[in-house]
Image (cartoon, rainbow, N blue to C red; front, side, top):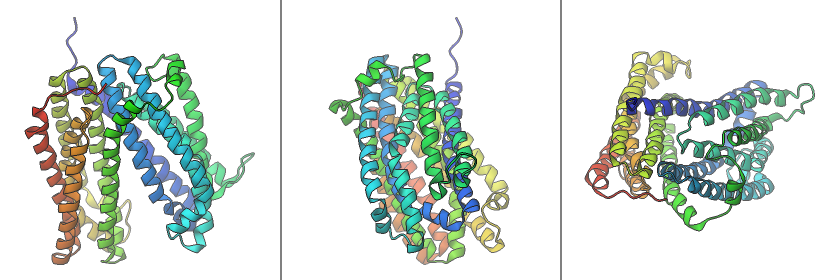
Length: 449
């Protein structure tokens, strides 16, 4: 009889494709913007950027929905309740479709009014409205794709979503320039090209994914059982939203706080704004690593809760903390060794580069306590506890980060705004760890399915 594999190898096998998947999700948007800027012009880039706040709020909801569904599916999978997996998936897809079709119909009709409400400059209003209309009309495809890839991870399969995302991204990157130019047989769709490319690639990938899942007799194959449960189950929906909505609200509050900090930074001039953008880009990579580890903790933890194995959950938390120190901490250290080379990817101006380098030194290391905090919140979310971790995060942002940024920006200048990052992330770490160790860990854990 072979010895059981160490937990860290299981964790890494799940984490590696998850991190690659998250990287691919951001790659398409980045390269599409490059295509638009280079092939059409800066106005096209500006028109697409106007839609970002709308996209973020919709994305926050669907990510929250997928988080709730993934935790419940993980618990059902760990408990061996495979019939429950179809019920959870069917309910999640039903509410996702209901919401996205409503968004598509309303947004498709009133996209121009929406762009006007966002104070879109008159010279790019037509282009921004056209882009928003196609994005909103094709929203159901994007929602279903995101929900399916997230739920598949709930049963411990991180490879299939990675392959699906790789296929979708590759098709999107090929289609976008073809649609912009209108090459042989393809109509020229101009600024709406990235939206059309995403819709076509998502549709084709969903077809291939469905065939693959059916052939493999996968737990989430779109078979007759799943289609039968493609309806709103009030009990299941309540549990999904109970976990998912706090996650979505937490994302929105963090985004609003970022806008407040950006407003403070803008007061120091365009050089400060450019430095802020570059430092945030770099910190995005370290935080993205930390968030991937948190998702892995949440999914593997949900499976442990489902199987009733409290010991494994504690081991998963310890492994997540270790991976954060090694991977997130290692990436931070690497960037600190060559800060000018990393920031030079985004900045060419020497004065702005020096400013960004100083700010990077202040803030970058805080990605490690941020990651440690998300491990504890991810573990609690695995057991269906999402409301209290959300309140702790919001408290840290509203009562600690924003006042610290306001006070320090007035006393020490621009560096004070950046100092708010380590202050809030350390506070989050202490709050989440304190609640986890002193309160939550002493309570009985019950699976929700």
